[in-house]
Length: 169
Length: 459
Image (cartoon, rainbow over all chains, first blue to last red; front, side, top):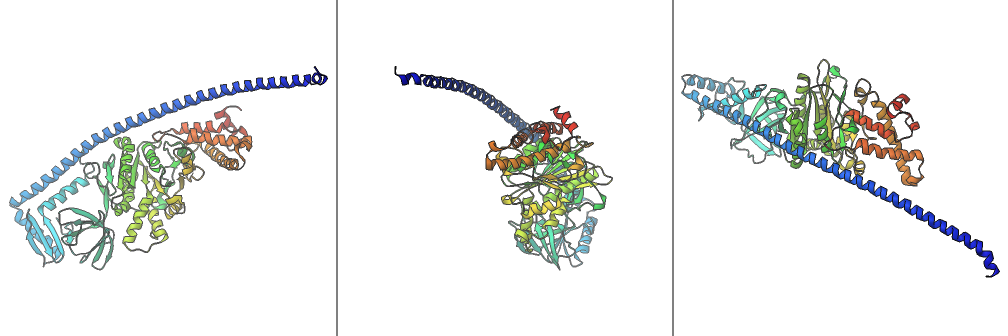
C-alpha cells in the first residue's frame, strides 16, 4: 500500500461513513414518507367512502321526499278536482233552475223588468229581443246587453260561490 | 238585476295590436278598469284599460290577442279595477300568474280586493323587528332577515338562485305561530315550475303556502300582475288575519322585462336600456307594500330574487332595487366555483335591518359579535388570498395562513349546506365558533374575552 493511500484512508472512511449515514437517513425518510402516504391514502379513502355514503343517503332521502311529495300532491289534486266537479254541477243546476222560470207565472213580469233595464242602459231606441234560453238580449248600434237567463243565473251562482269565505265547509 | 249591475257589451273593436285591443264608442269607462272580452266561439278573455281618450278605450288583453279578429267581439267593462279574491282559501293552492287555479281545483273564494294595492302609510309603519329564520346558515348568521324587511337576492343567470329561493320558502319560519309563505314565480320554464312544485310540496300540503306560477310562455301582462296578486293575498293574510307572511318573488328581472315589453307595446318613451322611466316607482310600489302596521300583529316580508344580466350590478333592475330595499344578498360565481352552496358572497351582502332582528333578546347574545368577527376575518382572508396569489402561500405569515385556513373551514362547515337541509340558528352559530377557533386568539378582537372563553374555552 502506498503512502498516499494510507493518508487517504481516513478520508475514504469518512466518505463511506457519510454515504452510509445518508443511505440510512434516506431509508428512514422514505419509510416515514411511505407511512405518511399510506396514512393519508387511508384517510382519503375513508373520507371518500363517508362522502359517498352521505351522498347516497342524501340522494335516497331526496328521492323518497320527492315520491312522498308527489303522492301528497296527487291526493290533494283528487280532492280539488272533486270540489271543482261539485262547483260546476252546482252552477249547472242553478242555470237549469233558471231555465225553469220560463214556465212560471211571473215570467212575463220578469221579462218586462229585463226589457226596462235594457232601455235604461241602452236608451229607448234599443232593440230588445227574446234570448233563446229565456230572458232578453238588447242591441243598439255597436252596443249590446245580454240579459239572457242562463247568463244571469251563471253569473249569480259564480258570484255567490266566490264571495263565500269557505263555501266547502 | 238592476240597471247598474247589467254590463253593456261594446262591439266596436277598431284595432288589435300585440296584447292591445282598441274599442270605440264607449262611455263611462275609467283607467285601470277590468273588462271581460266575449269571443264569437263563446270563450272569454280578460283585459285591463290602459288608456281612455274620448270614446276610445285601449285594453291590454291578459291572455293575449292571438286568434281574435275584430268582428263578433264584445267587451264588457266591470266598473272597477282588477280584483282578486283573498282569504284562507288560498292556502295550499297553486295558481297561475293571474290567480287562476292550476291544480284542478275551483276558483279561489273570498273577499275581493284590488290587485293594484297601496304602499303602507309611512306614519303607521312599525319598524321591522324579530328575525325570520330561513334555515340557511350563511343568511341567518350574517345577513339575518327581519319581519317586515325587503331583502333581495342578486344573482346571475346559471346560479342556483331558484334553489335558494325555494329552500328559503320551504324552510323559513319565525318564533311565533302562523308563519306563511307566498311564492310568486315569474317567467319560469315548465321544468322550473315542476321543480318549484316538488320543492315546496311539503309546505303546500301543510296549508302554509300559496303558489303563484307564471310560465315563461304566458302572456307578459300576466307577469306584470303576478307580484301584485301575491302581495294583495299576502297583505290580507298578514294585516287582516295576523299571519307573518314571507313573499318570495323570483325572478324580478323577468318581471321588469315584462314591464318593458308592455311599455313598448304602449309606445311609451324608453329610458335606460329600454325600460320605462317609471321603473323605479313601479318597483317601489311593489316593495313598499311589505312591512308591519301599528296595532296589527302580522307582517309582510319580501325576498325578491333578481338576476343581473352578465353579472352587471349597475343594470337598471338591481340598481333601482338596491335604492329601495334594505340590503342585499349577492350570489357569486367564484364562490360557486369553490363548490360552495349557497354561493353567497358574504362580503358584498348586507342586511341593513339585521340589528333589529338579531342579538340579545332576539336571537342569541353572541350573534352580532360573531357575525362581525366572521365578516372581519373573511375580509382579512381575502386580502391574504390576494397576497398569496402574488408571493405564494408559503411566503405568507403564519397569521395570514391561519386566515386562509379559517376561510376554508367557514365555507366548508358553516356556509356550505345541502339544498334540502334546514339548520337551526344555534347550530349555525356553533359552527361559526368552531371556524373561529382556527384563528389565533389574539385575532378575535371583535369578540368579548368572556364570550370567547365561554365558547372556545381557555387558550
